Image 1: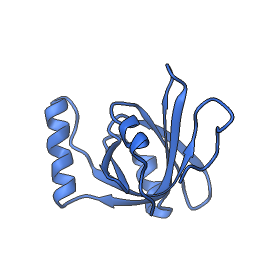
Image 2: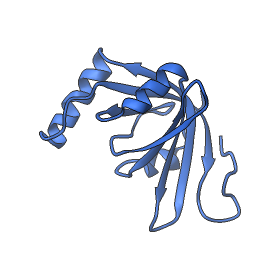
Image 3: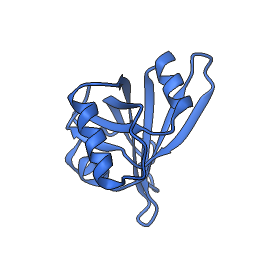
Length: 134
């Protein structure tokens, strides 16, 4: 696990993220997530609302990549790590309540994904694109 740098922590809130997974056969899947948020300086989380393929892939292979880009500034980061699927407990209940507060029209999450961040890469336009920052 790595410590997520402060500038990346401050960058993530409010942005749409793309979550990439792969099943045991290696077939990739990418899906947008609007619920990605910082949990602490080593973990990010997101809620599963409509993610059958993502869930199936993470059950077979917990490795995951999350990419967040600000299209206006062309700044972005990719966080890679190992996911844990949570369907109960404090973090799950807190996430359910947070989603209810944001929109009563959304279904309750099936699970919450906690990602232990293991590496972060620069995804910004420019000469550092693709370079590992931690």
